[in-house]
Amino acid sequence: MSTRIARTTLTALALACIATLGHAQQGKLKVGLMLPFSGTYAALGVAIENGFKLRIEEQGGKLGGREIEFVKVDDESDPAKATDNVNKLIKRDNVDVIIGTVHSGVAMAMAKAAKESGTVLIVPNAGADAVTGPMCAQNIFRSSFSNWQPAYAMGEVAGKDGKKKAMTITWKYAAGDESVAGFKEGFEKAGGKVEKQLTVPFPNVEFQALLTEIAAAKPDVVYAFFAGGGAVKFVKDYAAAGLNKTIPLVGPGFLTDGTLEAQGAAAQGMQTTLHYADGLNTPRDTAFRTAYAKSFKLQPDVYAVQGYDAAQMLAVGLSAVKGDISKKAEFASAIEKAKIDSPRGAFTMNKAHNPVQDIYLRKVEGNENKVVNIAVKNLADPARGCKL
Ligand code: BEZ
Image (cartoon, rainbow, N blue to C red; front, side, top):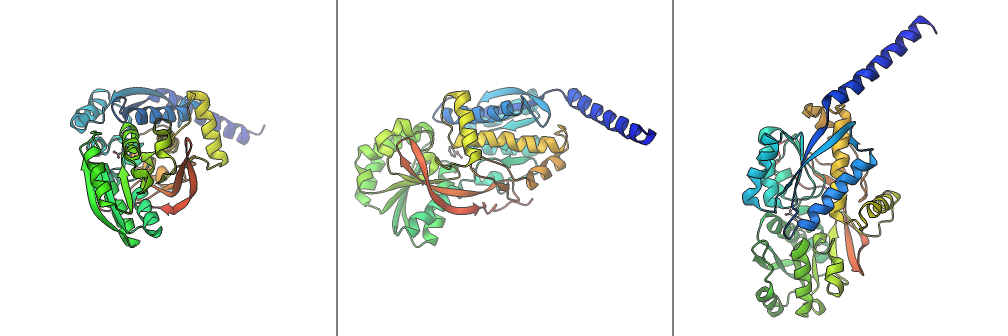
């Protein structure tokens, strides 16, 4: 071996040792998992955690070279407790990164705390438009959707389908309000008119009076935003009132995702729009579904995909900074440039760190939200108010 080659080899070896030592010295990455594990969104929180942990398991128990330690909080989908909960993770537990949450109202409190403290936040569900709008920040990312995205797509689909008069019904909080606004925008652009907007307080599931109002008004279509336990109850009540025979019920895919076994016959034939669907039949999705079913003895839903992709995004950022999450600009830049190889189909980020993704039209067949077609290709949230 010449002296030059020997020296180069030694240098490479030394660098590798330093890198390994660096990771070892960094210790475990502390991840705060702030999700609902009780209440109407409990199943969504569990699916997100499962998806996140599946990706870590696939990476040999590490992300970006770092082992992971979890601090878990049940946020109960309660905005009134959100600031305290997130501040405990940031200030008491000193987490390196926060993954959460499902409920838009809770997510907005989390985004505020993350922005103020600089802690990395990856939102694996909550669609609050503001999180990747006026509240956008270098350290805040979303692996899911904005409330506007699937809603706008459903509005376009219903309008192009020739529906003229719509009624909407939702829980009265940010997600419902924004979902209805997105639907209205797409629907009215396509020639329809939203004639009446009905609401119930979150997480109330007393729908009878409003169903009577819908029956009397006889719109061409009803658009509803509910998810989890509330979606099960609403779809069943709608069918029990006989409305599914005369007025098509549509919505963003949360209305029928992870809920079909419980909804049974009441959901059959329903059309929804979402960034995930059953029957995509791509090698990436099939591998994910097989691994998820093996680990959890369950079929994955959109929430599991979003949790899985939150881990993929975190891994991209961590790899770029060799596990040193304090390098915020490099961490963000790596995710901004990445193409995330998601089971839903590959996606990129818009300037506000929200996925630019295909929105599928799906139809319920048995226990599946079967893909019909791509309703809107590469749909980017407009990121209104984001100054990044
Ligand atoms: C939200 O609050 O943003 C939300 C909750 C459940 C499903 C989808 C969105």
